[in-house]
Image 1 (cartoon, rainbow, N blue to C red):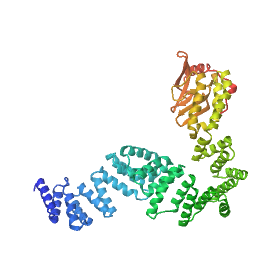
Image 2: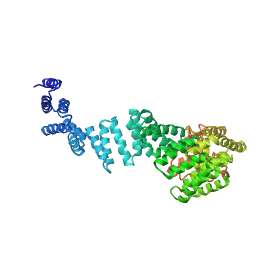
Image 3: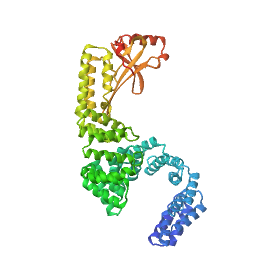
Image 4: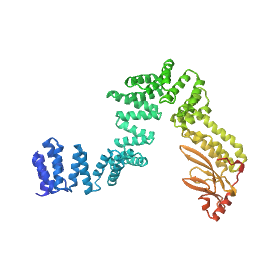
Length: 563
């Protein structure tokens, strides 16, 4: 029977539902034309119809085919797939490995073996090698990329590589649920909460299940984006109620967001509901916050007496309990006692960030002392309190801008009277103490103050580098001691750096990650950038030229600051 005749016979038997005949014809076709593979679907159809979709029957037929033709990779592949469906992973792996012996670049087999290894302990690196081999065959296959990301996550030391692959996959495939879910986990593992939240937000929009919605709320809480947290956790609460899955953790997270937005009574109700499900110290502490917000000070005082005995400072919840005591003192109007308590906490291990935040808030709300507020809030920000940045922006903008303007005004007489580089060293040195300008919390002030500083410098300095920002090298004659003022300019940062450089270690500034120097050009009448290596590596003629050039720069030795 010719191939065409066999195909026609298969179609006729299938149409007539002659299953035994169809099975016989399909086996014959697969045996005679194993490379064509057109009999597989008919065989599966016949077996499904005869035995109610019995995988065991399909496996028996495929084993017979492989026995007849051990090099039939299509039969081996179908056999492995069938055995996986049956839950017989070890036998499926035997089939997949046999396929790789015959066809080392068979991507489905590579991926399947990798997936099996990924389930085994300490086999993530080996699994990754199989996924990477599969990706070489099909670089744009989403499943292989996701599996590679899972392996890298399990390994724990391939974060950069994983993030590069994640970015590439997202650009290539756009929104894919599993890709975004894995990506969010990777970003969270790297501490990139904002990026993780962005992916989770898309997951929430496309597939608003409880896990995604709750995680949006949880992470938004951690990032202190309370409106988003409240919205997401309200949705998560309704989803959990519908499925009888309301947990104490969900209720606490929801209550925290509610309280931060001023819904203290609602927060109290949520917390009490959570305590009924699962009592915990963290829930009790959150309940104190809601009671404080409602002015129920007697209830707070009674609860705190118990907690202070159970959890002294240094214990698991000791710091949290002491902070609540400070808030109670503030609520009662005893600000001196509260300040003393917070100052003591500043000396305690692990207490600096929260105590600095509390002192900064007191300086804003009770004392109206912006200088003191900035002192403590900048400490809190440096210790990683994200809300400190927001408070500086909201409450201290005018104060800090005024400070910068006054700094420039103080320097104006010296700038007018002196045309040399030492003045600019003083300006930069004084400006360096204005740390808020270099912090992320002061983006707008960055821009305004940077413009003021640059305007002053541009009026009096005639040599600039063509790179971003500008550089000034006040250098001391033939002794070849350099003091570098570096300005880095970007939307998020303004950074002045002043540091000494000597001839033995190299001269000049670092721009674009390359050591650069400024040398006076007689011909062009300006300073030129050139690459300057270690002083000892320069030839005599080069050293002489540099020394002559440096001698032309005016400076005041007494004004050079200490590093």
